[in-house]
Length: 271
Image (cartoon, rainbow, N blue to C red):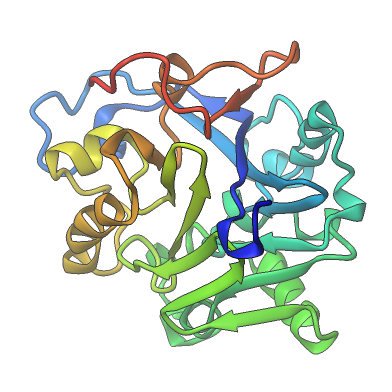
């Protein structure tokens, strides 16, 4: 009989939006084809083990989509229904960082405790936000919601590495945001790293090309190595925004926007 320490998780990627009106210069520093079109996808992730459910990031909602003129195809809470999860019943949400596209749906999870890095809260509420360029990916309303969650006892902080549940740990990466964390998950195929924005695309970490929104370049580059080390195999490193993920992993169900990750890729990871 499987013990708690041997718990393995199913892992799902749920796509809720995409943007095609952008170029490679918005995805890579030091790129030779910077003016070529480059689509970005937006995901949240779900971990399931028996009756246990952990959601990774909340995405953003229709209000934020209108505010930033970045339409969504469905709200993340709507996407969750495709795998029979009601956001209002979820008890644990890992927030990889507080950028609008990862923490823009906090209000959809009224029962959840939010798991995040201590330094990310300090960063998002500190003097760095005096700079328009730095605060651009944040939305003040979302940050205030997280502060309210803190005062109602619904935020769990970590300082570096932390255990969320048997088989699930978070790891401070930094780089893209001061308190960016990736998630390590035990699956039937070994340890998977949900890198989130430690690498937006496969090309970032496989070729060492940094993403242009960066707080600490050294941390970002070191993070490329760390996320590889967190996974049992390089094919189990999951970027935060890469449309190629849809080619490498099998679809789950009939919705057309859910992919099953823990089974492993169905084709070699190539960029």
